[in-house]
Structure formats: structure tokens, C-alpha cells
Amino acid sequence: MSLFDAAVGALDAAGNAFAEAQQALFEGLVQPLLFHAGLGSFIADGFDATGWLLVGLLQLAVMLLLIAPLQRWRPAQTPASSADERAQRRQAVHVDVLYTLIHRLGLFRVALFFAVDPLFNALFGWLAVQGVDGWHLDQWIAPWWPGATDTQLVGFLAYLLVFDLLNYVLHRAQHQFNWWWALHAVHHSQRHVTMWSDSRNHLLDSLIVDVVFVLVARVIGVAPGQFVALIALSQLVENLAHADVRLNLGWLGERLLVGPTFHRRHHAAGIGHESQGRGTLGGCNFAVLFPLWDLLGRTADFRHDNGPCGIRDQWPDEGARDYGRGFWAQQRLGLMRLFGRA
Image 1 (cartoon, rainbow, N blue to C red):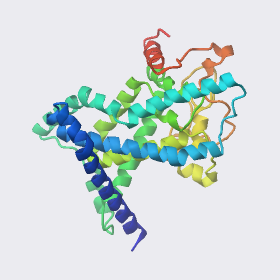
Image 2: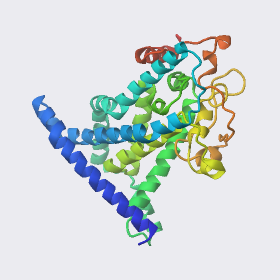
Image 3: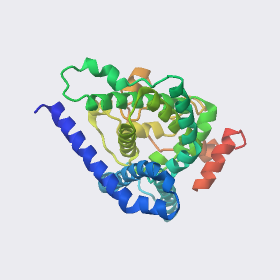
Image 4: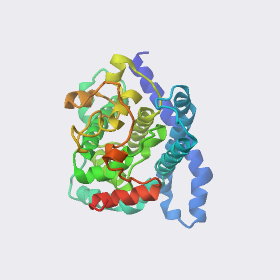
């Protein structure tokens, strides 16, 4: 058996195991709750939501069982020097945990389902009536792999590259436009970056990014199951990249996969997300999975002298700008910055 065939077999086995777990969780918990609440018309949507919930639970398990021990083993941040500083760090991390639970347990996607999905369904339904169908990238590249016994893995890898390039483009845009940076600054205002910090985003920022990804997924023909797997894999690597751990992947490894050291430079105050001078636009190391995009875009910086995380204007001698300590304060101040009132 070739390595490719082994990978395909492992992918199929993982998919079957996930499908069985999703069915069991749906039938044992979600479906009875929907009927009890009088929401029987949402059965199909509830099954899809169960998949996202299961993915989120698996992600949390990986974070707690694998990434958290790494953080305790070799933390990248300097230990807190006082009880007050330790309390501030705990509060900051607890807020990030809240963001993570909102996103990974499906609460944000439930909101998207009621607010955005009907618009998507109406748009693509109208396009289908007009005879406009999506372009299926996996089918288009299939003839390029005549020796492959199963094009599922090839298609998945192609979609992964497309999504990662899209992530790079959107992330770079978040640091190039003042209005978008006003929202994205919520993410960078965390001065105690940990594995929980990946989901710390303004909800409007997350909405914009998710809408773009859903539209692109529909256009290039990503199947629903593949979409869930692509997003889940990217998020887990992002959790590791944000982890508070001194983990050097080596010269070659850092150029193949985004790791904590590479991404911590992106969060370094005055270095990773701010241009030279006093502006807040620009930066480096925008890639989510593959540094290839930073290398091609000439935004890669592999130096390790990162310094503290945060935004330069948070420091007292730079203005001590308030980005909010709690969830609602951060959301409110993000909107105020967007409209030039903070």
C-alpha cells in the first residue's frame, strides 16, 4: 500500500467515525431537544449544527490535552512578577476562553444561521434557477492526478491551499484598511497571547470573514463535510500558533508550517502588525497554515526577538489607549473605533 493510499484510508476511517459520532450525538441529545422546543422543522439544520458542535468539542479536547501541557512546559511569556499582574493575566485569558466557547460550541454559527444563511440560500437558489452553477475545483484538477486511486484527498488538499491563501489575503487586508483594523485590533490588543486567543475577534470582523469563506466555498464547490474539516484543521493550527510556548520548528519547519514563534512575531507590539513609524497599518507573518504565502508576498519575518505582545498605543508613553478588558467592552470599543469615536 502506498503512502497516498494509506492517507486516503485514514481519512475515510476518520470520516466514518466522525459520522457515527455525529449521528449518535444528534439522536441522543440534539433531536430530542429540538422536538421538545417545538423546532421539529429544523431537524436537518440541527444535524448540521451537531457536526459543528462535535468538531468544537474535539478541538477543545486537543487544546486541553495536547497544547495546554506544552504551554505549561515551556511558556514563552515572562512569568508575572506580582499578584496584581497574575490576576490581570487570568482575567485576560478568561475572556479569551469565553470567545473560544462562543465560536467552538456553535453559538456564533447559530446566529449566522438565522441572520445570514437565508440570504445565502436565496442568492444561490436564484442563481441555480438562472442556470448558474458553482465551479468544482476538485473535479477540475482530477485529470491532473491520473494515478490517484481516490481524488478525495487531492481535492481536500487543493481546497486547503485555496482556503489558506484566502486567509492570508483577508488577514493582510485586516492590517491594511483603517476601518477593518479598527475591528481586528480586538484580536491584537491581547497582551497575554495563549492558545485561547485565536477566537478573540470582534463579532463583526468574524462575520465578514465567515461570509467571504462561505461564498468562496460555494463558488469552488466545497462539500459541507469538507468545509467543516477545512475550517477545523485551520483553527487547530491557529490555536497552536497562538500558544504561549517556546517551540522552534527549525529553519525548514518554520518555512513549511506556521508555528508559535513565527506567529508571535506577528503579535509583537510595534513589530508584527504595525508599519515603521507610528502608524498601525502593515506588519508581517500573516499566514495561517503555510508561511509560503508570506514568502511569496514578501511579508515573512523569521527573526525571534519578538518582545511583548499587544498594540503600541496601549503603552502609557504612547497614549494608553483603552481596548476594553471584558467581552462587551471590547465589542463596544471596536464599533466606536470603526466610527471614529474611540
